[in-house]
Image (tube, rainbow over all chains, first blue to last red; front, side, top):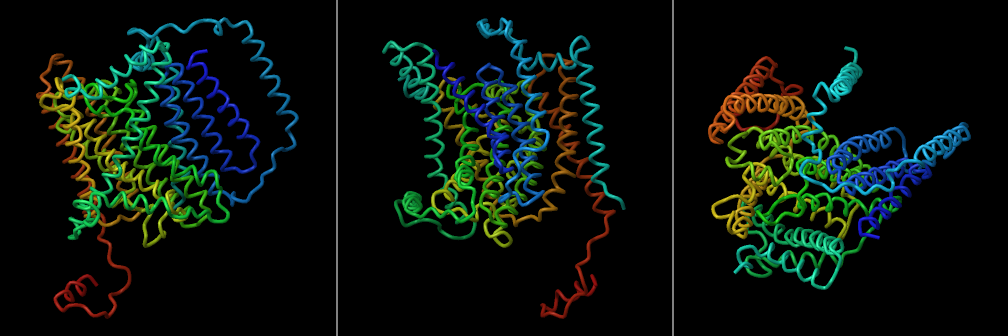
Length: 169
Length: 411
């Protein structure tokens, strides 16, 4: 086993354990903090895959923005310090069933996948970089339509947020 | 001789040869070298803070007309060691009702967020912690960890003042991250790369000359990110006891301060790397040790400026801080990014091999124009806005006679 594999296993274990804690802990703020650990673990996995850009974006967006928003919202909504929220609600059976179906489907789909055995190609100078990613996002043969649709969606959300926050005068 | 020209590169080369000589696998050697690099940068950062604390106390004393530490060692240089011993022996008080694990994690995280920045800063042509091709974005990512540290410190303390301080901090830090990212984007555009080493390599003309507005935006927003005066609302003593660190004592309190002291120098180092050409200077290419010298010289100049600002300006009000950010810095940053991109593209379309000084001149003119335009808008707005009168009628209080006429006119 190489050092990288040991690191991968350790990070994977931490990520999985933290994600279990996200749903099993009773304290809402702590759940949000465990979520941060999970997202951070995913970022480290990106690093191990040599996808530095995605790792950094993961930290900027998920930890820097979304998680902090979570914590902020949770802290402001109720007195969460002493709150013991219920761990289950009425639909837990259905949710467990759906999760099992999803897991089974993924398991079956990935069983025949050859990606587990392939050795990652060595990195060379013509490995796609952020430059290629950026060009692909705006080139007509690339992903310009999804990119523009996402931009329109974000602008719409921004206008909506401004409208809601404007208040009635 | 090689040692004196490039000590750190020499040690790395020697150690790698030594480890390989012991018959270790190349993967293991790389791992050990990386781990040693992490330890070296981390210890350097923390050890350097001891010196920084002395520097900051001396400078603050000079600005305030005092002498500063002058008893322990020559010029009080050993004062910090005495303080460290004192803080080590202090009691760790854990108040009732705190979330212990999170409470203890927060100070560690706040130091970590600063130390992580040193990983991508090139100290000389051969000395860089790690070369990642998204270094500029990494700086932003690590900055958000600092916000997180303060937020969880405030929450886990189970104290209203701490929580209020944390809320203010998050409002301020998240807001000021936006202009900071915009100014970093301008740097990325000018350097044509997000790698920090490439940014340094691209600075044949320092970016402070190419885009002074980006430099100013970065300086102001990083001062706000640090949470130091005039942006030190998060620990405003007169309102919030000590903000998010109210409940911390002993070394845990010390850790927050280590993080803060180191952060203020790190901002100097970042500004140097991004805008002042990093390690570049006369002779730095041939003699990397000179690069380290230039780097620290420039960083200390910027560090001194941030300290000067800190000890000269009074604290701002939170609505002023947020107004200034959202209504001035962010629009200015957006305009700057767009104009820089268009102008740079045009310049390189006209002449692909343009002289860097000519390009700098064009960009500088654009920056000056943009600044004058922004200034004009603000002035117009200020003129239209009615002047705020003091609340309530002037009360009959004792005042020097020559001031009386002014107050009566205002009333």
